[in-house]
Length: 463
Image (cartoon, rainbow, N blue to C red; front, side, top):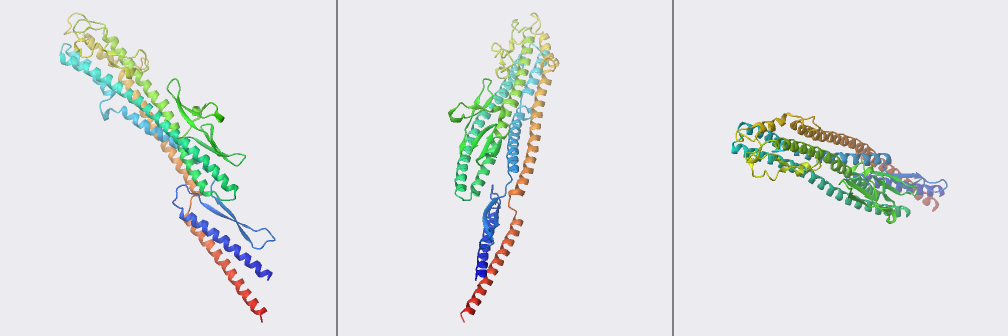
């Protein structure tokens, strides 16, 4: 009896173990298209010697590799940053595309051409009105472009604040999930589904900000972002956005235990937030600075030459433009001088107080400014200076595009590696189903055989 009873226990445990394997495999198959799902592997182990049965269920394992996961979080952040920069630089590039409409370059050319046309007939009211109008249009285009760059900075700041709000929300959710996972596992329960939720949240967090994870000595998940501990176990810190004295974006992490917030901007290296910071405070600032310098150089060169000439009223010393005293903010400040608005007769086409209507000496000098190296530190003409800005913006956009493509390829590569380790393969699951099915059938056969033997034994004893 003892031998047959042992076989019954063996068959019972085998049936339970293979049923568990079938259930886990079925769960994998049903979640093959579930985003964020990580394949489960049933864990079976031999029972200790001296006990009935031969196998027992040890639980299940999520098929993850922590090093691949960390790499995937990292590359996700870098790819998001690159895509963010590319998106905004493409928009900035369109500001300097005169093919989409009259821009700074075409209006600059039109103004310089107007000086040449005025030189052929300095007394013509139409030529004078056209020259004044084109000068006003150049100033207007400069101002519009500079205003749009400033608006982009405002929009990026607002977007950064929204991203930080999302980061804070995800950090709080991750801290809550950590507590729930810890409670479940402390009670001997499985927390695989909650861990899947946590991984999905981490991927969302990694697209917003650079993320690094590890497990501390207590077995708690620690999430670091931009050089600070964002989540540790069930506790989360909050981030905030500020501006320094120069208007550059700052990222702060809340203090521990009510302490003062800590600035962590310099450690920001990935995610949408890094792309926003780099675009707003590096790319846009550089482009705006070069545009300001061009506006300052053109306005002052034109004003200096214009002031040497005489209007039809015989007055000299007038400036054509009003512009900031320094290059900073020159493009946004550029406008026709108040004394010139609606006064084409005051354009100083003459270089002498005599023969004003027919003298075009100063108009010729104004037109000749197009051929002189008066911008970029006296090394480039007006047209060359503007072409340098356009080329620089184009190069930045192209470089951002190339980086985005490279990061996307790296992300796809790591994703494929991650899927090979954690994803569900229907082919492999079908093999597992067959394996567990055959093992279940064999255990059932053992059970049926033992049952038949017991019946025969009882029949023999009962005679």
